[in-house]
Image (cartoon, rainbow, N blue to C red):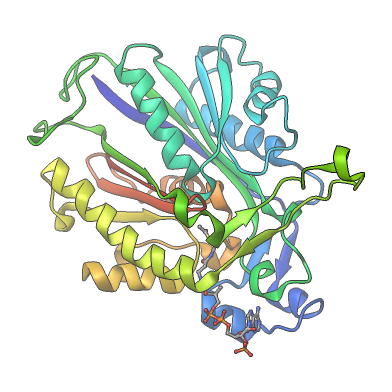
Amino acid sequence: MRIKIAGTGSYAPEHVVTNEDLAGIVDTSDEWIKSRTGISQRRISDGIGTSGMAVKASERALANAGMKAEEIQLILLATSTPDCHFPSGACQVQGELGAVHAAAYDISAACSGFLFALNTAYSFIISGFYRNVLVIGADCLSKVVDWSDRSTCVLFGDGAGAAVVTGEAGGQGGDFGKPCVEQGSGCVPGASGILHMIMGADGWKGPVLSCESRTVGNFLTGTKPEMGYLSMDGQEVFKFAVKKMPEVIEQLLEESGMKLEQVKYLVLHQANYRISESIAKRLKISMERIPMNISRYGNTSAGSVPLLLDELNREGKLKEGDLLVLAGFGAGLTWGAALIRW
Ligand code: ACO
């Protein structure tokens, strides 16, 4: 069985906010933001919510896969900024798309969310449970960012990306219930599609990057609940990312019996240009193999990896047989990675 990404799509709101725009509301500058993060501009919601962006990205992914919404059996929406506590964003997407045969639910793993959802899709397909799964990463962080806090507000943008993941009978890579990578024996020779995946979490480090949804205790104290804002210890996140990402990528390749030289692109979460540069340095590879679009979108959280993957796909940069590593890290703290032969 071959479990592959059959189509990709993405969407970002049209409204562009430049570094100069932000310098008009907080004490910052284009020079500071660009030199510390690589970001020049970001897209900010002009009213569209997380599910709205997810629907647009999904429609494009379905068209790219040549598939109808009715053929999808499961919709997974990775997000930490759903429009409602309930119904889930995934159910809103299911309704809007008319994916009448699909079950739907959200997955919360912050910026690692798309990789967690991809892993979940892979597991459902390999087990024989579903054949066609729509995997979406979408976030509208502009609604939880404190626009008076210069240390965080300059980093984020809104956006979504989606992938149609499908299982094909036959082909190399084993049958139902048989993943491409058997414990300790590397990847099945000649296998293609999603070859291997890793997920991880360290809940003790949760406080370094968090966003309270609502303060509790209002019944007893009589206080009105207030929405929380995103808060972050930037340097701790930076240290975590530059250590964990190379480790995860090396583990992924080692378990698959593959070498870094065989990989065409590392499609990494777009958090900060300097983080990606440090990862390249630690892995001793050139930045040419780490495509970036952070300068145009900022950090779109769960949207970032599928948005970048879709851009590469549409630009014709992904050829059949290319080996890709997708990897991300985020609040939780969490991390995830996938090895894919396109
Ligand atoms: N403009 C101007 N000055 C600023 C700004 C700003 N936007 N933000 C902070 N500063 C100031 C600080 O107040 C501080 O001033 P001080 O020295 O007078 O106290 C100075 O710049 C240095 O601040 P640091 O926080 O030490 O700056 P640092 O070099 O660490 O860069 C940054 C901050 C960019 C956030 C960095 O730590 C980083 O990239 N961390 C990774 C975090 C990340 O990428 N998070 C993304 C979200 S997490 C995720 O996606 C999973």
